[in-house]
Length: 147
Image (cartoon, rainbow, N blue to C red; front, side, top):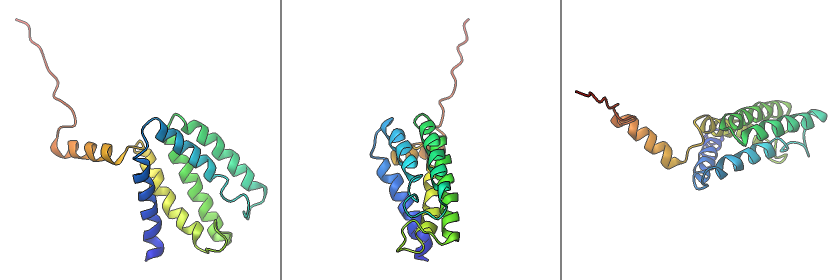
C-alpha cells in the first residue's frame, strides 16, 4: 500500500513547497525542473540514444513552459510515460530501488494535474474553491438605467 501512497504524498509535498515560491518565479522554476527531469535517466538509462532524444524533447517542452503551465504539465506526463517504459524494462530511475520509476510514474501525474490547474499556490487554490462553494465566484453585473 505504501508503494502507491508515498509517491502521491511526495507529489503533494512538491506542490505545497512550490506554493512558497511567488509567481512568476514558480512557473519558471517548474519549467527548469521538468526540463531537468528529462535528463534523469541519461546516466543509467536503458534506451541508449533515445534517452538523449527524450531529453531534447523535454528541453523544448520546458522552454515552452517558461510561459505556460500547460506545457509544464505535458512535460510531466511525458516523463510519466518514460517512467513506465523504464519500469517495464527493468531499468529504474535509482538502480538500487527497483520501484523508483514506478513511484515516479505515480508522483508525476499529481504534479501535472497541479500544472494543468494553473500552478496555483495552496492559498490561491483554497480561495478559489471557497469562492465557488459560497457562490461568490463572480460579482453580479451592474446595470445602470438612465431615466
